[in-house]
Image (cartoon, rainbow, N blue to C red; front, side):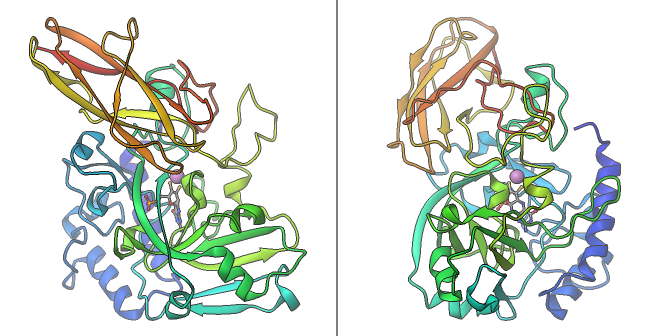
Length: 417
Ligand SMILES: Nc1nc2c(c(=O)[nH]1)N[C@H]1C(S)=C(S)[C@@H](COP(=O)(O)O)O[C@H]1N2
Ligand SMILES: [Mo]
């Protein structure tokens, strides 16, 4: 959060350019396209961020109109206000993007998935093409993908704490209809050994280099076999379309209800291991560190917490004396949302919001409340959700150094005029 944005962008752009040269699975044609986009020498595909924007290009392929996104380094956050009226499933053109480096433009025809490791029978690696995957029974599932750091900026702005990482507000989440195959089916076909314990998917995007220059390798994070065999998908469609470039084309892992990092995009190989596996993404990152946690950090993060967001601009203006229908969404990794309470007076009085969806596991609910602001002035809008497991948003979140899993009620300022 403290890194100057321009230096950050410049470093990421260099990393992006360097990364292309060794991005496995990127066809020559796509390499040329990417180089063209960065250098401006050749035509670029429609929708690619243009060379004029290259100095601050986040390395995201789809357009990022200002009304829908806030660009944060290599990432794009959805503006919650822009979700009003978009329906239950987040349209791809509104869906947030979280990239450690940049989107690799992969060709589905060249793509393969290698499943390997000593957790397979005879330790024999097995390769699958996209057509091979499509021969498994297809499964469709609605689920959100949410970054573990969603809401991180409120640790500082609301709780006065310093945390590291992308300063998301609440828009590092989207809900889509995913179609693909069960990871369990693919692992069993590959020949799962009884000794297998961990499964580690790895992305085909460029290796991730930290601010101090350490190359951490490609994004990869182990999943316990129990979760891998439960509800995890290898998804090749999002909202009825082939998976878009920025969201993992041609295939991503989809781990419902868990921190977004588990849902590895552009998956190229999956290691199945008879020993527990470690990567930077389940040791140094995606655990809770800080005064309230053990020195080695908490256990690796799994489920997301409970959150709520208003579909309203930060500091929006509302007319006094007129009735407004205010809308928002709430979600939890711990089960469907069963109740949302709202306050328009900074938390003095609360009432129930009207829920427009049945609370479902892995999804969110849309809600609304009508409000006639009595008089001009500043107001704080609050929303507090409760999930089926009885988990309710607290007033404050216990701090952790990397600002993960913010779940406190956010105080959303508006001005009544
Ligand atoms: N290969 C790869 N997979 C990845 C990432 C990445 O940078 N590379 N980012 C992860 C993180 S931190 C999140 S929150 C989600 C974001 O998914 P989205 O960009 O489709 O919204 O992807 C995850 N999968
Ligand atoms: Mo994330």
